[in-house]
Length: 440
Image (tube, rainbow, N blue to C red; front, side):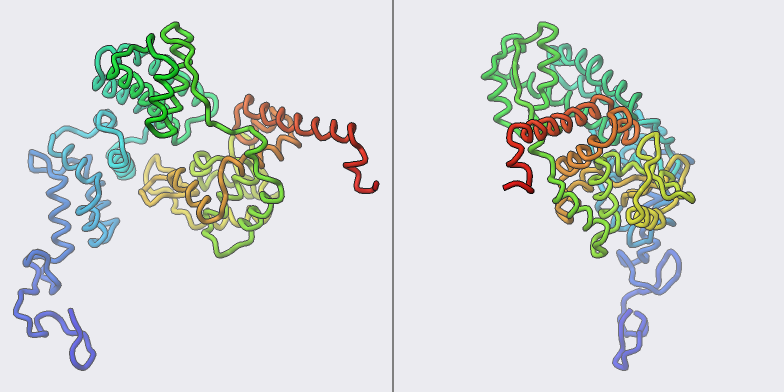
């Protein structure tokens, strides 16, 4: 408990302190929390109270959660979680209700990190089965979201949300697979449209009466994400529900001026491959962006099993076809895989980029921020440079199959490269001497 005059450790009772040092729970001599129990016993009591339902029992469903809190973590770690984690408050309310916890119950709650973290914990501990994909939560979320809107707004928004946003998201997922951010983007489009309709209603206008000035004013009052209402306005105009209202699109992918120069790309790539002072996972992620044009959403979904080693080299499955990694990147990727925790529960993959959340992968936004701040890699220009370089050497169909791109995206990059090459050839024809270093 302390140090005596001779420098040796001294327990509480021997120090002469008159306080009680013996835990009522386990009988051990320790610093007591609240005067009666040690930290371990106090934490155990709090966990049991948290998970005990109205019938005075901890259900079989939540036994894994109890094990996770009391055995998989230290008493100190669990003490911190119980005091400050938002998902604990959500879990407490659900347990108090006395019903088995389901994905549907979580879907009906306000969407946010607390609910997402709790869902991860419940899946990791076996309390819930893993969802086939994140899109399962969209339909119940939509019902709850529309219920909170005015009847007129909900009536107008429901067909757009159900038959445009959700339907396209599912079709895209069937073709290319579901990314971690797909449900988030779908919700954002629906929420943005709802915000616009509410703004118009508050200003005594209907969507049919809305003018370009109304749209520009609303966009100017908020963040740039409001420009995502462009999709809703195009949908509404196509159905005769609004005028042809325009929203300038800020998406820049495919524009040559926003593609990283080749020299800059190789400088950053060499740093990823050679700079041992950088975090290993950032080096691997940065190289995947700069070499193969991968976006963080796809990078964080890679698993240890995505890497395959053979006599011919190390391959990485970015989509359906394995990509041969250059030896320096292969060595880094294998080292990262060796550090990643193996699968710990049913339905939980061994992520190549694991999160601090048990059973979850790293959040794409955090990876993007880290690449920006630590390596100076900005995703859009870096990815663009990689795709432009690959499109110059590979047919669009091969590029799409290899990297998991849509054929439309791959074709656009091939056309972009072809356009730039055509401009270069035309410049040589018009002024061959100016471009020939041997003349002059």
